[in-house]
Length: 117
Image 1 (spheres, rainbow, N blue to C red):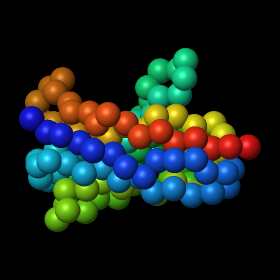
Image 2: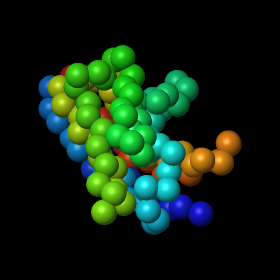
Image 3: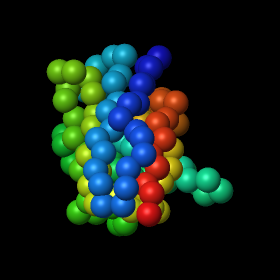
């Protein structure tokens, strides 16, 4: 079992920045990958960014160049630096711990990001 706690969400104006943090209850080096997902009202949850144990990253096309995912294995924490935020980035952002067991993932409860125009 892994508990994930997100923080850093809030209200920001268009063009602003936020940094989300996800603290895990156990070592994230045991994960296959860590990721950030988001879900806007009325929309499906989508993968925003992920980072593997080897450091390979992947981004949603619409956030490429604006968002950066990183991990601090010593702190069991994953970050999402979000710059040049747009109203369409408004969503609840969820942290994901992807395990090596097929179909077994852990999720945080989410943190709300609201970007005002």
